[in-house]
Length: 237
Image 1 (tube, rainbow, N blue to C red):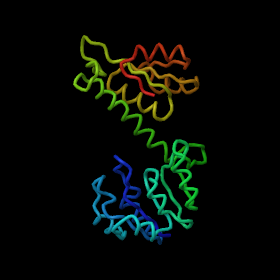
Image 2: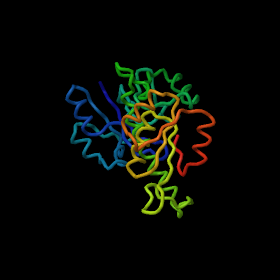
Image 3: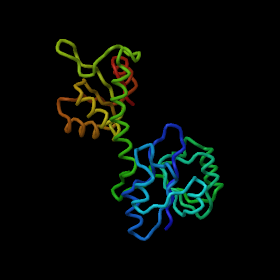
């Protein structure tokens, strides 16, 4: 198996599809890896580290696609990348095709096999490649929200955890899935008053059992969501 790792070209995407540890695993299994020059620069991995792991460095994306059977990326291919795909290629990346009909058409036209990270399903029904991204998104949402609440960033000057004599911020999390649970955990850790809204009573019971008195829960309805969001300092959904 010839594995290719092109540099990500989507705006503000800095990750890389395979790190040196992954390269070593592929090589140990008898495969080969070609990495585009500079592919790891955004995460602090230089070409020499990939070479030390057994990869070959290619000068550009054209060379990577031409020499590979399996293309491993992070984000969905941009249209210029889709044009490099051939019927013998298998593409492995986050795709999110429902919101991108142009990409879907381009992938179909290429004849390549495309496997979306977000649809890979474990035997228990979980989504092992999507879950970590949801965890990151949930935790980041609280960090970004706290930043936006600062006065100098256009916010109301609210501190999530409050201070003695000042109540903590009211944080409402819409949805108690993986992202919502991680957002709630971060907000609780910062001392905020947190309410999670979800349609599933079973999910709300699980959250109440996990966080106890540190969290409030509410079953979702239009009236409930409207009232809670209007009264919140930070709404995450």
